[in-house]
Amino acid sequence: MDINHEYAAHQSALMQAGLAGCEDQRRHQLIKASRIAGRISAFQRELGAAAACAWSAAHLLAVPQSSTPSH
Image (cartoon, rainbow, N blue to C red; front, side, top):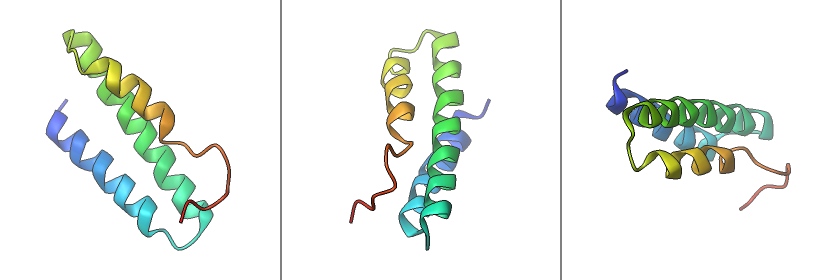
C-alpha cells in the first residue's frame, strides 16, 4: 500500500464532501473517506503503528449521523 496515496485520497474525499452540491454527493464522499480511513487503519494495525487507534476512531466519525447540514 502506498500510504501517502491513501492519505491524499482521504483528504481529497473530505474536501470533495465539503464542496458537494447536494447531501447525496456529500454523503457519498464521506463514505468514501471512511472506507479509505478503514484501509489506512488496517494497514497501520498490521504494522503495529501507534497512530492506528486514532484512524480506527476517526473513520467512524466521518459518516454523518444525520442529514442536517453543518453550515
